[in-house]
Image (cartoon, rainbow, N blue to C red):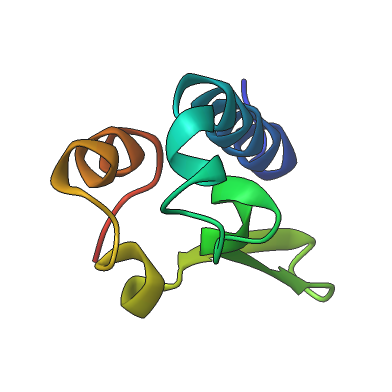
Length: 79
């Protein structure tokens, strides 16, 4: 069984792999994404429930090219 923290770790690792795949984008047009694609998410920890929730920063997400948004939406659910 995969727990919440394992899911979040897998999502972060997938975003890091996108950093490598789209490194030329990050160096040229995506300089504003300081920290790479991981900067698109916010992890909120709920200590009482011993779980974490990942939310996507939609304003930043929508500024990305469609191709990159499609890949990210496969990693993180978009509300």
